[in-house]
Image (cartoon, rainbow, N blue to C red; front, side):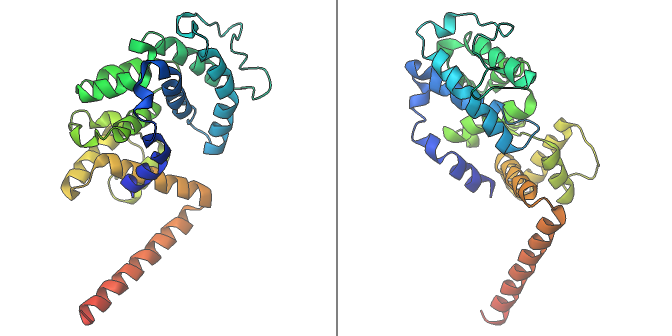
Length: 255
């Protein structure tokens, strides 16, 4: 499920993946990155709305030839993020946008996607992880989400080592809930690193990619949120298992 979901989500990006790496396309690469950084602790519809409001202002600024060399001030709101249309009302979002632009302006070719891809290929992904998590209000979950998407987009998932896979596994309360439900964890609460370690261990036993397993849990979490009732999701999963068992039984009787 996780691999299929990633394929569907990144379908349009596959058409542009080489473009994102070009020096004169740093703006497009940044917008790809920035969109993911808005998805934190709220409904996806709200995150998309806030990003959609900020995007044209950021895009307009980054179209300037001197954009990456200019120092922006969040105090004077040089990007007009607080002004309509599409104003941002959350100070954390505003600080994150300014911080992200400042951080990427110091990266080679001002291209965060190229940096991530190069570090993943060079098996030094922690360097990219540290640079991104240094940005205020961007922590482990969102950084792992971005790195995972870059790895999948450029067909790098199979080359990720067991030591590095933790940098590609975003974990939130929904994922933790599913891990408990599936028996990956027994604790009501567990540190993020332990959740990741248990996912890697269980996936190794089952011969499943922990990256795809993790993203499958994200997909189930979205379904759970939309339905708004965990019992309804569980009931339907049980129904599907019964149907599957019934089909298997029929095959045994009528091979």
